[in-house]
Length: 505
Image 1: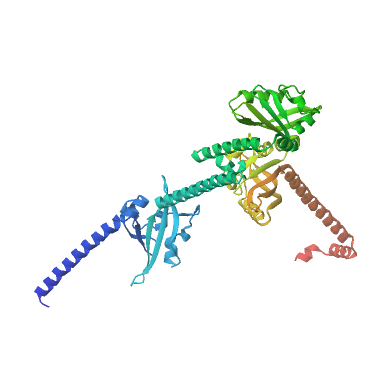
Image 2 (image 1 turned 180 degrees about the vertical axis):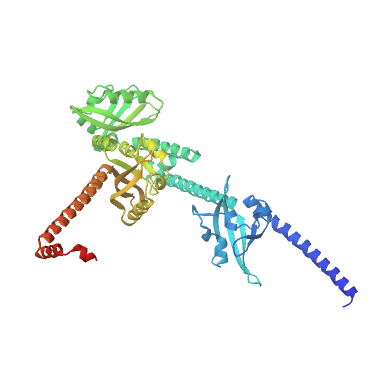
């Protein structure tokens, strides 16, 4: 090849290199303009190349990124747990075990949801590389979540509409029950208002239909059979009528009530005041628990009152809830007793989450740990592995026992008090579960056994000293026996006859 050919070849090579650089520059620009971040790493996960989208993702200068391990620049979280470096996608790609997965990437000002793809490449020179494509799907996930929520709301709304339609059909079939629309009536939107108005209209319609369709005797028979007190009162507070149940409770006839003012019955002053206030108010319905004294016996009634005839009259229904009130009072007393035990117990009583964060503690528990109050203790202890346990293995043993058996009995270990001092405690804890067996929280009792432990240590030391003393006395006894033996005396006699000066020559 002559010189001209060489010069031409060099010129063509420069052109090829120039075109190649231009093409690479265009590729850099193109790859930098796409939404996905692209990263090329070596076998050690060090970044060999990345596009500008990745620079923006990790908020780092391009030159500062190259050569750094990808897991250091892009730490990931999966299902609330930070990934160990060995679990990072780039390691799995290099081991050819990776499939597309979503992760969280937490930055100082926001949390991103990333969809990560990975490709494994082995170059001709044998180098193993990973090409990672990272897509920010945070906005898409937010929109998906919003869409799911909207769909659920729409489905719920349509279900409520179906209930209104079913209620309208029930009115036509004379099977309407106000409870059908209870769940709809509590809504604050137009549909809820429509359900409430519909229910009120149907109730009024039913009242009118019953007044027109049923004879007075039939109506009285039905009302007299009701196991509750029913009364009708006009706008002036006079009784229009009562059912048999109410009259018999006061040992009066039904006619004896007609025309009487509210409160004429002895022991019914609270009921009378309640009804007067309701009649004078703009309310159309009301309910309350009223105390009545019937034949020197204190009873409680759940009274529901409803106005009709455009507020010119009121019907009230009273259901005897005395036994329920007694049960509620017994429950209240039981709760007070429990609270008293909880507050005044000498042992520490607590409830905690499964991770150890305290939900509630009693004063004794706070005192054991050296805190001024239960609230102070709960607020101060957030990492019990570090703040409480002297030996971290005790927490691990506790967790193991709870997972395997759901209970811990007489577990003894050392804890740090607030001032840093160390004491011994004994703990008994059980897991509280719901109906399906899921653990809701832990509850337990904890005692300060430091004094007992000190006594045990003193006893062990005394036993050790006693053993030394016994061993000393035993040795003295053994020596005495040897010196009294015939062999020792013979040996002693022989030694006395030995001329020591001659013996050592």
